Each structure stands twice: as structure tokens, then as C-alpha cells.
Image (cartoon, rainbow, N blue to C red; front, side, top):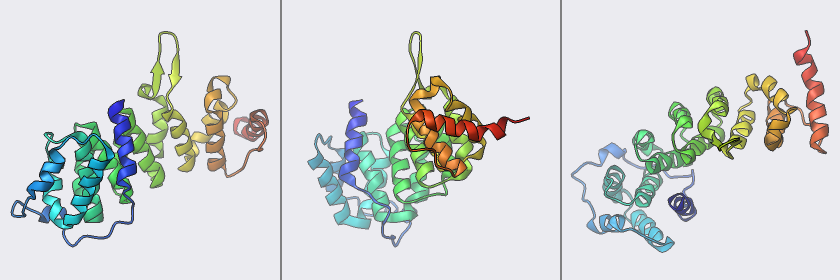
Length: 259
């Protein structure tokens, strides 16, 4: 958990945005003939414990610009570097190379280390890369909860509607539920799943959601279901109590169930 929290904090330091200027070369054009800057390699080998170290990594990397690329590739490929530094290297490659780094970074979506899968997802999202939707959808079933959440965020924010069925299928994935000795509790990701189904306007979810919002066992996600239905149906429920919202959706559901 500490590792996860430190990586989340790292995002605030990096502040990588989608407006990344284009590079003059492809990642593959930086071969072994390029000079590998020993100072930068040493910085990436160091286990930085605070934000200052990460800021220095970012500063030194950006100062070298394209000349830093061989180092970034080296760091991303090798597990001898600390995980958070490999995360930084992935972000910095995207920052320097822009969208041309997409094909190379996308290879790490299948990396055995969840940190690299997560870093790749984050960077590709910052680069607005929509053409890796199939890979994002595959990661909705990842063993890591944080990776599944990020893959879901990618699909949602990039509005990849063709993968709405994959998102809906997540509701039936046991990995998204906490199983106790006697009870099964929905993890927080379930709320995001329901809302994303709405954002993607997945029509096939309409009837199940209309039924779910009437059931007490889904009480903890009634607000999320209400939001999803509004997006799918294109109508707003009363902005009052949940009881009135349920009545509103019940009336709308009647034609759906009529013989």
C-alpha cells in the first residue's frame, strides 16, 4: 500500500499533460550509438525517498531533451532500477518524444511488473492515445486493482465506446469485490464501472440498471446507477430524494416490461 501511495503522490510531481510537443525522431531511431549520459543513469539508479529527488530526475531529463532518450529506454527495460524511477522514465519519454513514443510505451502494457503497466497506461492517456483500446480493455481484467482502475479511466476519458461491453463485464468479475467470511462487498471500483457504462452510453445496460436501482442490495451504488441511467436514457431524474428517483425510473421501466 505504501508503494501505491508513493506512486500516486509521484503523479502530482510529474504533472504530465496531453499537450506534448512533437519530437523530430522516433524512439527506435535512438540506437546504441547515442551517448548514454552517466550522470543521468546514476540519478535513475538512486532510490529517491522524497519529492526533491524526483524533481531533480525530471529537471535533468528535460534538460537533455532527446539526448536523454537512450537512458530512458535503458531504465524502462531494466529491473535493476527502482520502480518509481522506471515510472518517471516512462512519463519523461512521453513528454520528450510525444505521440511518437506511443508504440514503444504500449509494449509495456503487457509488462510483468504492474508499475510499468500502470505507468504505460497513464502516459498513453496523457498522450490521448486511442488506438490501444484493445490493450486497455484487456487490462480491465488485470490482477492488480490499481491497473484495472487506470485501464477503466483510459477507456472512460478517451470515450472508447466500442469497449463498453468489456466495462460492463467487470461487474461480474469477482476480483472487483471484497469477500469476507460471510459477506461479499463491492469495491470502490464498482462505482466507477457503473458510471463509465453510463458515460459510454451502453444501451444494453439500460434494463439491468432499471432493475438494479429498485433493489435494496444495490443501495450503496444507487446514485451511480441513477447517473448511468441519465446518461444512457438522456433524461434527468428528479433532483430530490432517491425514493422519488426510484419511482421515476420505475415508471420509465414499465414499457420495458410490458407484454
